[in-house]
Length: 161
Length: 273
Image 1 (cartoon, chains in turn orange, purple):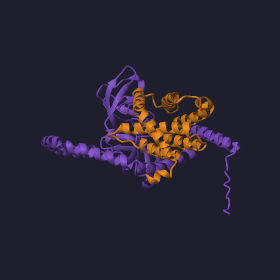
Image 2 (tube, each protein chain N blue to C red):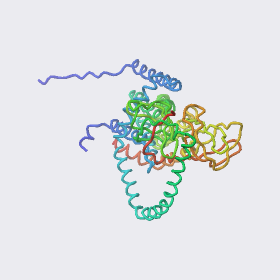
Image 3 (tube, rainbow over the protein chains, first blue to last red):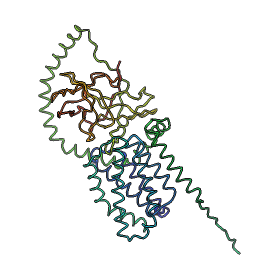
Image 4 (cartoon, each protein chain N blue to C red):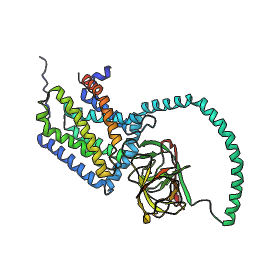
């Protein structure tokens, strides 16, 4: 607990990013949904970092994780890298509108962003890397997102105090 | 009087910030572009991810792995009694088969001598064990604990006791990556044993079936036909077991692979003689 005092919330969120990335790229045969849960958690953490802790270092973070996700999950660079960087650029363009939103609107935007991000990744994986759009897998991801969304928000707000 | 220290805060200038964004976006564009052409840089990044990133991710995810293994062992322990009964019955059945197999083996040896035939056309390069797998989200890839130090090269075939598993796509000094048959980006040229119908198979994306992407002269194999590698594309050795025709449609057919991709522990890397 003492150790956590030395870390600011941005660092804690970055640790969550590393852990969720590591778990999502190692398949567990008995619990395949484990990977999916941490895959969603990674996306949620990245969006949260961009929305609430925006900094220029996030471009490098998005670049590194985008490349690694693409190589480890798709064996080609493209889908994740494009999606993560597009999210960052889109955030800068829409920042002045996002600031005006109420907390409920922000949460709704947060969730919609997550779904759009996953959808774009699926489309790009299909378009660039020939991985067919798997409807059941996508719905599975949405279902997991619905389940873990509120607890994750709760956890992040606790971390952010 | 206590001295006053002034801390000078250095802020990134707007130019540096914009330069960072532009360079990251340009680099991303170049990486996406070169990833399709298999450029040296991309190959280097892939090797780096295999040799450095995968061990780190394995270390971080180790507690989950331990938990997963514990649950697996607990489930196995629970079903021990039931499995024991089944195994006892199977031992009796197998003993009968063993007698028959010994007779057939003797007969086979005699016939082979008569035909002057060799045992197989494969050279075993290395038997490697699986270190981790990335086959839940999108692609179907596994990583092995042997690399080019063990003479494993790109495009070599990976098999196990049941048949063809996939193809080596990347090698580092001590690791190699294998793309599984069930990945939609791997094509294999095959033929059916009974009718010798040549076709190309790719992964269906569901991780279970292989689907034909091309069938020579549009002749469809029969349901239940066994499919083996044809060796025509010079990638896989000839006559490696692939699977069984499970479904036939008007213009395509589906094959159920013999290999149980969920339970892969050891893989043999082979090449044709």
